[in-house]
Amino acid sequence: MIDLLSQYAWTMDNRDFDGLAALFVNAGQYYHCDPGNPNSVLAISAGSLAKQFQTMFAPLAATNSSATRQLSSILIGKTQEGNFEVALSVQVSIQTIGVSAVQLDYTAKLYATITRDGELLKFVVLKVAPNQSGIQASAR
Image (cartoon, rainbow, N blue to C red):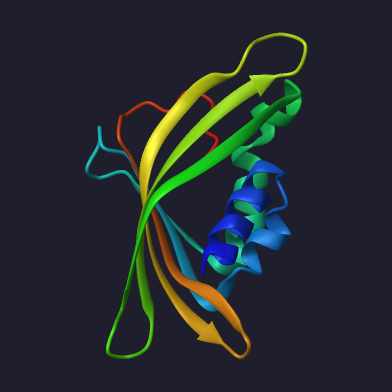
């Protein structure tokens, strides 16, 4: 389970969006919530992740910036169906190479439902709930 969460952070940090989609079951869903706007919930199917994130991360790529995720405070529970419910904290920092020092982009809670898909663990649902509104660099 920790490997799956680490793979999520690695694929996001390295903008491997095709690899990100592979971490989800076929019908998997990614949600991003904006605490400043209760009507603003971005829901993306696993099959659409790569295209959506390439667009969202274009400003980072254009400025030669990189994002780094730090995962902590991981809580794991198992459902009667055999799935895992996970809650953890994440801190995302942005650095523009040669221009700026590392800057905090946002902190968030991540909530995931994880299931076994053959030999692998995969996300059924992954929800990102930022602790503040107005993410600056959109390094979701």
